[in-house]
Structure formats: structure tokens, C-alpha cells
Image (cartoon, rainbow, N blue to C red; front, side, top):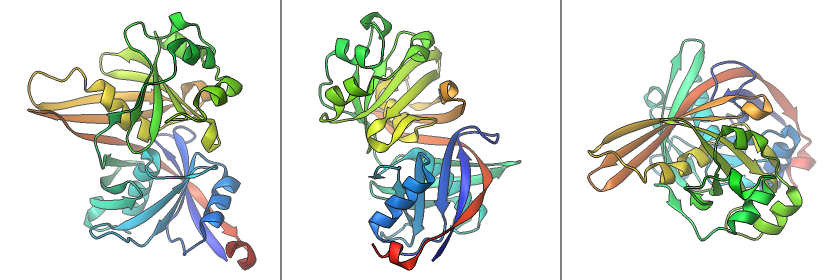
Length: 301
């Protein structure tokens, strides 16, 4: 069996930046174990298999895999797929449609912007906070920091957008850059907690945040760009809403420490009762593609 895929760089306007993504735009029905093996073989943050929709109103269904697990919602695969499928003419409405993921239907819009593609998703649900996190000193030690390196005005906190994260606000960008995750302490602290993904956050401007994300449990030592975490971050950003209903634009920068700088664009819409919608967008570079040849015996396992 021959399977063709496209390789994209997502949340960047230049090659070799952002977060890599493999997309199988016309994927046959495959066993879950085979899709997981393919994701592990390609060893990117995520690999997506595009399948016919099973939900009414969806253009298609996305199966999203990290090297270690299938995930219900992830920003860079959805943004990347929306841009690619629009470019290939595989979705209706010129790129304005809904894509089906395990977390629900995700409205997307996509277009070409010069040499790049661009796509934006609307989160299928508003982000929320989770249970009480592990103790602040233990979190600092896990990150290779002192307690003084954490933000004195904000404690670590669980946040979710359909994927769960331990958000750790740190004092400044210098502290963010010093983080060295201790895998043994991570396992002892988070392997059995509500969230095992660690999302460190530093203020870098009035409407800008620098972040890092670590997901050892998913086979990702450090992620270049994490869209689901950026959507979840809106749960914290929206605690200081504007005085009147309207829209706020935020920029999230990630990946500088591992040589793959990424730019994620957040929009927060507020109504009279608070946060109403979260959108996430970014540029996409189409890098090329390839073909996997899988023996029928392997695909049947």
C-alpha cells in the first residue's frame, strides 16, 4: 500500500521555522495501531490522517497523532490541514468550512497570502481551568528553576482547551530560557496528575507572550508551537477583560530555544458576559511531500 503525504511548517512564514506537520490528505481506512506506527516513524510533533466526515456539517475528519498517542484537539494540525486542504481544493467555500476532530467541529477559514498559506480556527469550546496543581516549589524544581524564578503574581495552574496543560507563569523571558525539564521529577510530579504537558509562560510585551511546552508523555521533548495550549492560555489572558465588548489580539511566540521560531496569533472576543470566542491563526509553508510504502500485512495489524 502506498500512502502519499505533504510536509508543512506551521505558524511560520519561512521554511524551517514553526512546527512540522505531516498530512495524509487522502488517507484510506487504517487500523489505529498502523496510524500510530506511521506517526512514530515520521517522528514529528503531529501527523494527520484526513478521512471522510462522520459528523453532519463537517468537510472531513482529522485523526491527529503525536509519536506517542492520538489527541482529541491540536492547533497546529488543524491550522495546517485547513490551509493545505483549501490550497488543494479539497474543502468547500474557498477554505471556510468546519473540520471534525475528536473534540468536536472546528470552524476554519483559510487563504493564500503571497508565498505562504494562512488559516485560522475557532476553538470548539472555551478554555477553562483545571484542578489544584502540584506545589509551587516542586514545579520550579521540575523545571530546573528556583521558586523565585516563577511569576510572583501568578501560581501554576491547570488549563484546558480539550487538551490539558499545567500552565507555569515565570518571572521573565530570562527565566523561561533557563528552563531545563528534569524528566525524573516530571514523572514523579505529573505522570499521574490531571495534565502531563507543561506550558511555561513569560510576558514579553503588552499583548505578547513567550512560551515553551514540554510533553514527554506524548514523545515530544519540547514542542516548537502548541496551538491547543495557546487556546487554553486564553483562560488566563481573559481574566482582565476590556471594559466594553470587543476583540483583543495577542501574539504568542514559541520555539526560539530549539531553533524553530513560531508565531501564533490569538483573537479573544468579549461580549457583555465575558469571553465569547477564541480564534487561533498563523501562516503555513508548504515544504514538499513524500510517499510511504507499507506492506499489506503491516497495515492489517
